[in-house]
Image (tube, rainbow, N blue to C red):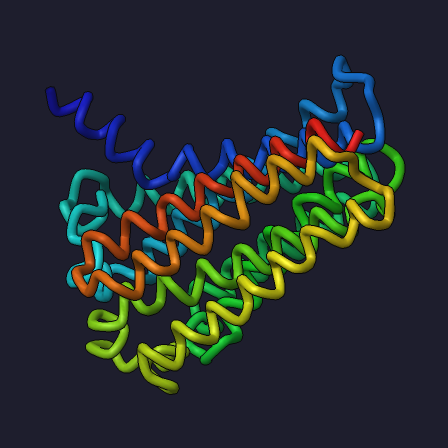
Length: 281
C-alpha cells in the first residue's frame, strides 16, 4: 500500500496529463508540416518535451510548498508522500535527459530545450512572483511547443497560428488560476495580477485576452490556411465553450467551481488541437 501511494504521488507530482497534452501539441504541429508519422526524431522530441514538463512541475512544487499548504493541500510534497531528496534527484535526471536527447535533434530544438529548462527553474524560483511575468513565461513556453514540433517536421513557419492560439489560451488560463490561488499567494506576499489589480479587474483582463483569441481563430480560415472543418470545431468546441466557462467562472464565487473551470479550459485545448489536426493539414 505504501509503495502504491508513492507511485500515485509521484505521478501526481509529474502531472502526466499536462505532459501528454504537451506531447500531443508537438505531434499535431509536426503533422502540419510532415505526414510521416513513423519518425524516430518525432518520438525523441515528444519524450524530451515531456521530460522538460516533468522537471518543471517538480521544481515548481518544490518552491511552492508554502503556498500549496493553503491553495493545494492535496499535493504530494505537502502530504509528505515523497521525500524531497528523491524529488530533486528526478528533477535533475529529467533536465539532463531532456537536454541530452534534444542535442541529437537540431540546434534550434537544443536551444529551445535548454532555454525551457533554465526559464522554468527561474520561473519557479523567482519570476512567478513578478506580476504578469510568470504568466507570460508559461504562455510563451506553451507556444514554443508548436515551434518545437514544426522544427522537427522541417517548416517552423507553419507553427505561427497554433503558437499564437496556445499563447493566448494559456495566458488567459494562467490569470484565472491566479484568481483561484489568490489567498495562498497573498499569504506569502506574492504579487500576482489579481492581487495587484483586484480579482474583478483581473477577470475582465482575462475576458479581453480570450476575446482576442476568439477573433484570432477566424484569421487562418479566412486566409485559406485552414478548412471549414477546423472552423466548425474551433467555433463550437473552443470559442463558444470558452464563453460559457467564463460566465460560469464569473457567476459562481466558490473555489471548487473556479478550479473546475480552469481544468475544463485546459482540456479544451485538446479540442483546439483536434481542430488544427483535422482542419489545418
